[in-house]
Structure formats: C-alpha cells, structure tokens
Image 1 (tube, helix red, strand yellow):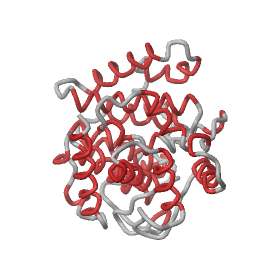
Image 2 (image 1 turned 30 degrees about the horizontal axis):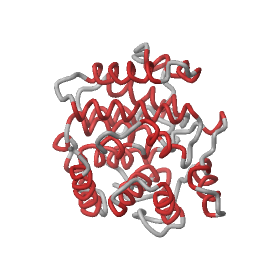
Image 3 (image 1 turned 120 degrees about the vertical axis):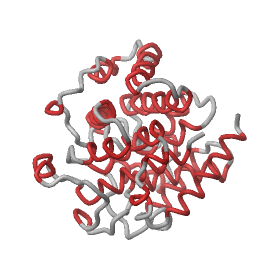
Length: 304
C-alpha cells in the first residue's frame, strides 16, 4: 500500500521547504538548499513541518478514527489544528487566508460542505497540499475527492487539480512498471475525458501538453496551477527522491508546499528507502507519524 512512502515523502519535502519559504529563486541559485536545515523564514528547528503536513495528518486521523470519510469530523480535526491543539510540533505559523476563512466559517456554524471558498481568487494550493491520503482508499471516486477539496477550496479548478493529483498517485501505486511520464500522461487522459465539458481544462493545458521542461517558464508561487506545473517539472527532470524535492525547494517562493506535493509523489514512485534517513531522523514526532501511517494502511487494507 506504501502509505508511509507518500506521507513521509510529503512531510520531508514540506520540512525541507519551511526555512526558505518566500525566498526568491535567484537567491536560492546562489545559496541552494542541499540538506535539512533550521531557522530561516519562521526561525523553526530543522525538520519542522507546516500546515501542509498538519492538515494531511488531520485528514488521515479522522478517517482512521471514524473508519469512514466524515466531512464534519475532518473539519473538526482541521479546527483543532487551527486552534493550536493538535498536529503541531511548534507554535503555529503560516496558515493560508483561504483556509483560515473556511475554518472560521465552520466554527461560526456553517455546514462543512458549504465552508469552502469558490471564487476565482480562491485557487491557492491549500487543498492540493493535503489531498494525498485519498489515493490509498480503494475505489475512491472523483466526487469524494472534490468534496474533500471543497472543505476549504471549492472552485472547480482546485477540485480538478486534486482529482488529477490523486489519479497520478493511484497510477504510481497500481502500476509500478510505468515511467513518471506514463503515469502523468495516463492520469491526464482520464481527466480530459471525465471533465471534457469543463472550461476549466484550459488552465491545465501546459500539463496536458507536456510543456514544462523550461524552468524559466515555471512559476513556483501559491496558485494551484503554478504549483502543479512546478511539481510536474521537478518529477520529470530528476531521477530520485532527493533530487526531486530539492529541485522543488530551490525553485523558490512557495517552497514548502511545492516540495510537499512533489515529495508525496516522489515518495510513492521511488519508495520510502530512497528518502534520506538522515532527513527523516531530524523530524520531531516522526514515530507518531509512522504509527498513524500504519493505522491508515490497516484501514485501507480492510476497505478492499
């Protein structure tokens, strides 16, 4: 099932990017990240994860505890995290505006399925960064993936991005003999067919057309499409986990989320043993995360 491959892959990418979030690409060209570091943007210890990992773990814990997908319970977990009660290693930092507004709405009594923001400007990467656990659930359907995105990010573009990401991850989980290019192309074909009547597909054109090799055209900011394009660029232009996530971090800007999303797929594709153990050992509370991964894998196995 490889739950720990993807989830630890995501966490490590996240932690690598935290110290240099918002750093310009030119700055990182002069002084690139090559290892797990501390201090930096948020003055946190090495191995500190951000909201990307926190919300991923909150999603997994809800599904494990409820033995099902319960949107209200997932939101309850998000709110416990938001209120600094769980899923943090250190004091809270870096919570996105769209996520904050959605969780405030839930805390003020709005039903979970109506909390997500659906405006054109609400297409940040805040649901894409936490969606990976759904790839491990047998027979997960597109509507459920969209609904999980919609807890915070309800615009169709964000929802399609989450579905595409899960399709790539599931392809990697189910077809070990395919190349990264083949995984991506197969997932893109499914998305183009399923959403063939959606005008939103135009925003995914560069991914569909494999037009992402020139790094100078890659924008590694928080817009969901830019993040996805950055992830695809890094996966296609590296040959192991370490190089993929470091490339993602050194693109600059939204370093933690780009590397987390890239790391989730790279972890699945290359496997847990390809993730540098010295990076894993740096992470405080890693044993708790690994334990949750085991419980989540048991749930997914039982759901077959």
